[in-house]
Amino acid sequence: MSPPIPKDSDEHFGFRRWRAFAEALPIALLIGVFYWFFDAWIHSALTGRDFRALAFAPVPVDLTPRILVLLGALVVTVLNRVLRNERRRSLLMRFAVDHAGDAVLIVREDARILYANEAAAAHFGYPREELLEMGVTDLDPGYGTAVWPRHWRELRERRVMRLETFHRKRGGELRAVEVTARFLRFRDLELNCAFIRDISERKKAEQDLRKEEERVRSLLESTGEGIIGVDAGGLCTFVNPTALAILGYSKAEEMLGKDAHALVHHSRPDGSPLPRSECRALAALERKAGIHVDGDVFWRQDGRSFEVEYRLHPILREGKTVGGVYAFSDVSERKKSERELRETAAKLREANRLKDLFTDILRHDLMNPAAAVRSSAQLLSRIEDDPRKSKLVANILRSSDNLIELCENAARYARGAGPQALDFVERDLCALIERSIRDLEPQMREREVRIRFDRPATCGAELNPVIVDVFSNLISNAVKYGPKGGEIGIALEDEGEAWVVSVSDQGEGIPDEHKTRIFSRFERLEKQGVKGSGLGLAIAKQLVDLHSGAIWVEDGPGGGSIFRVRLPKRIPTPLRAAG
Ligand code: ADP
Image (tube, rainbow, N blue to C red; front, side):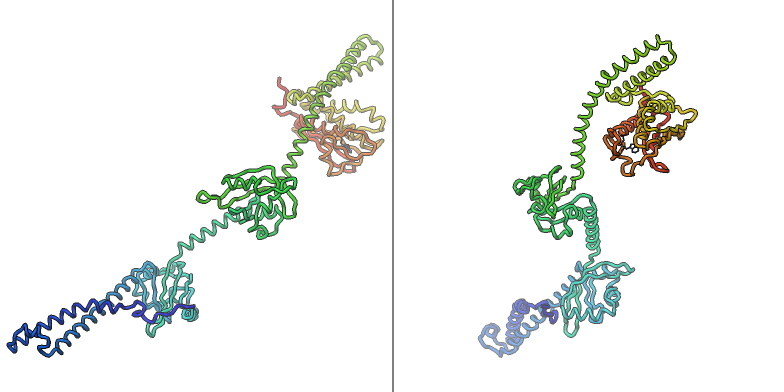
């Protein structure tokens, strides 16, 4: 219901007539009494009668003039009082409105300004006299002449309106304002009494606040962690998109207002219910403390659980918990990797133990017979005269030397002495490759395989003899996995800083998805009828790594595989053997 319109200011401000009367009465009585005695004195002077008799006799003379004077004095004094009060009041009102803190305009139906107080003049930047020459349509771009009549009709209907608009100050600056417009009817005039408050600062503060909220919101929304805000009772008040995605909800409304514990933390990892009284997170909230848990589970909407790492921070206001914030991540993958890592570490420890055992066997059970063969061969070489037999003995000597050197190196490497213990000496790479070829001759003869080795004139590099194993493995694989009667090509390419040795065969080749896998231990592809351990290439890779080199496999242009080994000609200083 719209408020009534005050008819005019008399009624609105409310005269206190009885009070003016009460104020005037003693003065009027005083005048009346004075006139009474004055009249008695005049009569006594004119008639010679006794003054006292005239003044105090009950009805000594005609009373009419005295009563008339008394009443007249009363009326005049009352009127004087009333008018003076009214004038003072209206001056006071005017003064108060003129100096009011808010800008005040009184506006006519035709939008012209009838009154503007000092604050209004300061607000618009015009002197008051100039404002009275203007209309609202000049000052408010939102209420131009086309809009004003409609606005006036609406104001007349609603009586009071509060609206936000912009005022143009002198000089053109626009200020955001809040206007409280009140429709008044003063005698035959329709008026709008508008109180104007400059809200530019407030608007700017609101805008800054909105921007800040926006920034915080977008930060929360773009973070990789799931974030759930809860109130003091544990009900969800905020959920970011990451949390929705991890938990399998499509919109925040599905979670907002619901109990976070019942939604995501209701059961233990084994599926048994987790009562609220046993929930560590809720207990922490009660203690007003934060908590970090790595190794719990949260539950998705579809009933599946996932391993979670979460932090819960309480939100405190005046020492009281008013809510909390869960920040969580799905760590299922990480936990799986950690488990695998632990298993691998256990396997490695076992493998290491076996390796030590093997090393001991290598040193005692292989080196000792090899040393016995060599000393016997040395003795034989001294006493043998037959040149054919001497050549064979020389072969035995050379092979046993190689065998002992290899065993020593392998044992040293396997012992974990590390690459530092291996010595890298300038050696002829081609001679080492040829040694591998010679060692594999029986195998090649059996498979009727030919070798084509394009060796350059010089091919020196800092190498350790264990590198022979790499070539032996590659050539042996080419023989095993290539066709019977096929050809193996060995080539060397000078890259300046390094040599690249290529071993190519005419076998079936290796599918792309296995090209990296075969360099891992115990990785074998399905090769029917070919014996192997799946260790050769893994060891080859380790030995190449020791030389700071690289090993990889490519497809041959006409089928088959090409294994390539890059070996730097100079070994980086930290890897060289000390001394
Ligand atoms: P092994 O030969 O003892 O099985 P390797 O580590 O030497 O072990 O080789 C790993 C796997 O890589 C082999 O089982 C084989 O499937 C594949 N492979 C190696 N060399 C070749 C090759 N030249 N042609 C085709 N497959 C090969």
